[in-house]
Length: 158
Image (tube, rainbow, N blue to C red; front, side, top):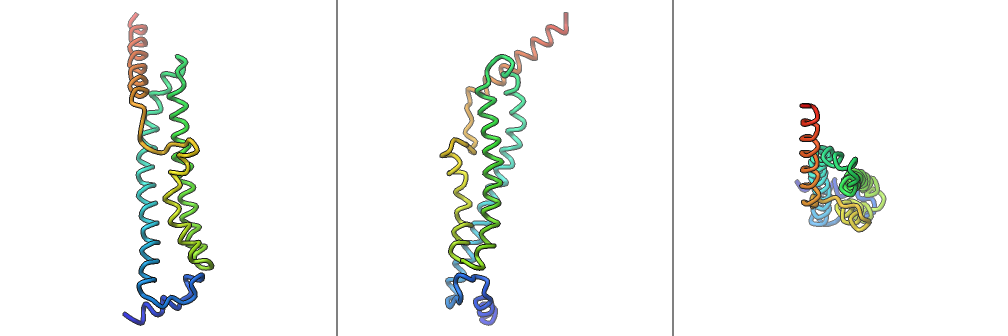
C-alpha cells in the first residue's frame, strides 16, 4: 500500500505541487476533485430534466403569443438559454481543471471547484436556471391553451 501512494506522490501529476509528502494532502486533493466532478455531474442531470420539462411546457406558452402575451414566452426562452449556457460553461470549466492541474495544481483545483458556482453567477446576470416558475403564468398559459382548443372545437363543429 505504501508503495502505491509514494509512486502517485512522485508521479508529477500535480505539477504545481512538485512533491506531495503527506498522504492526507493527496487524499484531500483527490476528495476535492471527486467532489467537483460528482457535483457538476448531478447538476447536469438535474438541468437535463428541467430542460425536458421546459420543452414540454414551451408549447403552452406558444398559445399565448398570438394573443399578445409574450412575457411568459420570453421568460421561457431566457430560462432555456440559461440552462444550455450554464451546462456548457460548467462542462468546459470542469474539463479545463484537470488540464491545468498538471502545471498549476491550485489553479486547476480552483477551476474545478468554481464550476459549481456558474449557475449562481449566471443568475446574477438575469439568467435564471432554477425551477422557480411563475405559477400564475403557467396557469394562465394552460387556461389559454384550453380556451383556444375549446374555440377550435366549437368552430369545427359548425
